[in-house]
Length: 164
Image 1 (cartoon, rainbow, N blue to C red):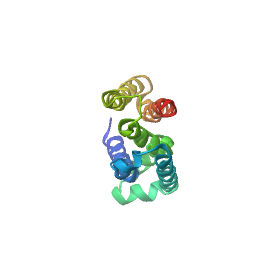
Image 2: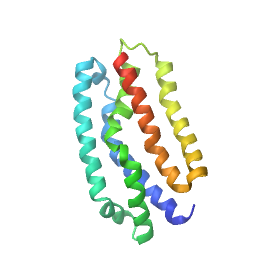
Image 3: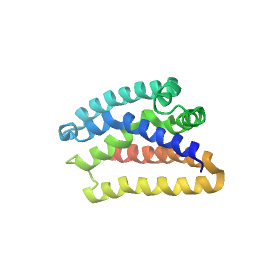
Image 4: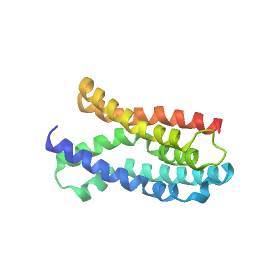
C-alpha cells in the first residue's frame, strides 16, 4: 500500500466519522428507545439526514477532499474510494441505531450480552472480509468488503428488529 492510497483511506475515515457523528449523538439518547413508534420516528428522521449527507459526499467529494489534501493523486484516490465505501452511507442509521435499540429496548428478546457480541462481531467480520478481499482482489476487494459487510449486517439487524 503506497502513501497515496494510505492518505486517501485516511481522508475517507475522516469523512466517515463526520457522516456518522449525528447518528452517534442520537445513539446515546436513551429516551429514543422507549417504544417502537418513537424509535421509528427518530430512525426515519436520521435516515433522511444520512441520505442528505451521503448525497453531499457523493456530489462534492472532490471539493471536500481537496480541503484536506492538495496532492492530486491523493484527492483522486480518496474520491474513487469514497464512491465505493459510501455506497451504504444511507444505511448508517440502521447500522448504529438498530443495535442500540436491540440493546436498550426492554421487551427485546436479545440480552445485552448477545447484542454486544452481535455488534462486535460485525467489526471482526468486516476485518476478515477486508483481509480476504485484499488478498484476492487487491485494494478494490478491500474497498468493496466494507459495503458488503454492511449489507449483510443490515439484513441481519432488520430481521432481528422485526422479530422484537
